[in-house]
Length: 404
Image 1 (cartoon, rainbow, N blue to C red):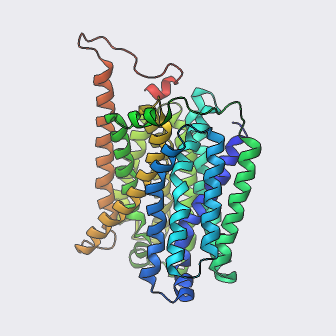
Image 2 (image 1 turned 90 degrees about the vertical axis):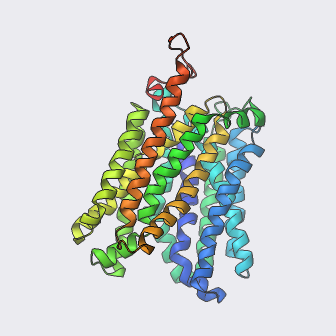
Image 3 (image 1 turned 45 degrees about the vertical axis):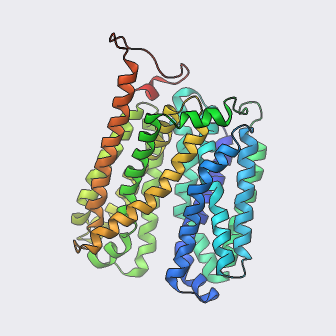
């Protein structure tokens, strides 16, 4: 694997840190700005809104630019957003700064995935994407806890200054390690990127992401009350248990990348099926501390096994112009976050018990399996002519694993 993937991972580490650290800093921010905890929670929503809006818009606006330049520019915007967060004088300006911080998130991962696959042989595309995503999963193990401790000891503004420094390190890495000659500017332009989004298989692939990762967030959004009320953990233990989720997610991400290079479809369907199983077992596993800790790690692993396959599935369906579709997939991840948490909350509000969001998530994962199956069924119908002759519909340079 080329060293240039390290530059993408550094950027992903910074993005993952700033995305999730706000959850741990909400009390500090609320106290400092004299606002309520629910009002401070809007800072999380502002970032997610920036991701959803920025992913397709920035990918479209930079459709003709060299990919290396785009990545550096996106990370520069990331640094600006976090620096503005550090110096925000009030809640309104901090909301705006968090929105700006979220704008480059989706486009960076979307364009980064295209760049990562362009720098490796066809049989290693999934692994290249998983190595970029490695920065995101490691952020949950090391970046978020470290940033939270920094905020608690030196003030929340110091956290965002530290994240800005990570962004500057990512810019330097991108400038030094991403080769000029291997990553050319796209030839399709905005019209070609938009044309790729008119494809039904692309939208079915995006729908698989929303349903599949919505299943994760339906349960994970409420994992703290599950661990304390059902499994009997003290609140002080939850941080360590959430790190276990990060460990499972990291292992699942690396495993999914390796398996998907052999069989994209098999890894995707197997990952979603394992997610269904883990979520259905969640209420049973939450009855004892040791099994609850295992459940948290297994949840991270089962969910993130599908991360690289889902990203590659979208890129495959939009193979002639993948940047915009790849970035839209990151917006789909954030829609999954919001939608999954909402559905899990409905299960709780209906009085089905503290572990009920997990079976609700299992239903979403089953839906994801169905949507993924529909996407491949559409492909099969398009590959067969009216006379019954099978024709190739994918680019010749794609590996057999991606065509499976």
